[in-house]
Length: 376
Image 1 (cartoon, rainbow, N blue to C red):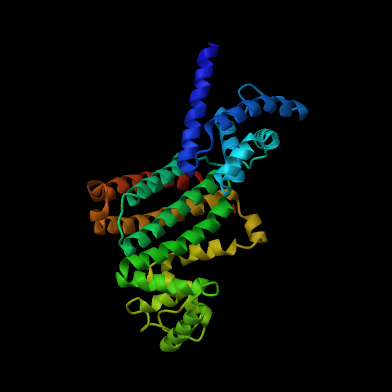
Image 2 (tube, rainbow, N blue to C red; image 1 turned 90 degrees about the vertical axis):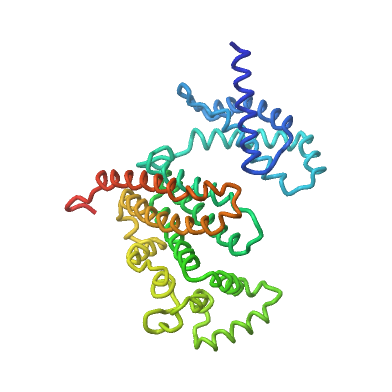
């Protein structure tokens, strides 16, 4: 029996180490990590005893968690160092003892004394898992595009950023941080609007957008003087007096019809500029609500967590629907650059199924958290 357990433990160690190496691109010395793993395992019960912590059955730290703590500790302290110095550190008993002590304390405190906020959901709950699944699939398809086309690669990066942001939002929801999730959705919605405009207002707009982004890092640029001169010329040419507004939204002036509508239909701001150009004005009330909670206030304290949760999952559904439509067009346009062109053709059908699952889950949420008269 002991041999079977030992083999199972070794398999867990190897599998977790392989996974961590895959997601980080780092491959620390396996023998060093294995030795540290054995020493941390021996030190862990001592730390529990020192703090008079008595564990319930099956309540100890998981083996894969121990491997992760050791792996990331070592990577944090060594990933920026030359290989020769890392090798010396791995042989240094002072560093080894420090790693074992620190990791053992981290595990005991974080895994057994941690006070976690109650959450009405979990990463395993259907409404969270469905968003994760849809984003993972879209990221998988975007990752199939390879080539030197600047617009394709630039839009790809923006789409990936948006999808990763959705994953971050739902991670916050799963952890019970609905307020923070709503705030991060606000950032996502801004990026969503950028992608809609870039994807629907002409191919050349992307290059105007990229060129305009140089203004955001103007002070640190070696071309600072040249950029300042160009900024002044553009502001003058477009008749814009507010430089900050132009830096933030001036690229919209290259959207067909935007310049002609300046001061009437459009302005260089989010509400009457970017959001309106993206056709998302109907969602400004939601954006404004998320903006309110950027700063601590009694309003934030008074709102129940389930309201932030409900607000965010429904706005995420709308955002993902819009982003998925843009990704569909993107994959269709650049399918020739994909290692999986047939799957690009099937993207819309597959994603439609995932969006349908999200819609079904949200109908359940609407019933579970329906507004009751007299409640806030």
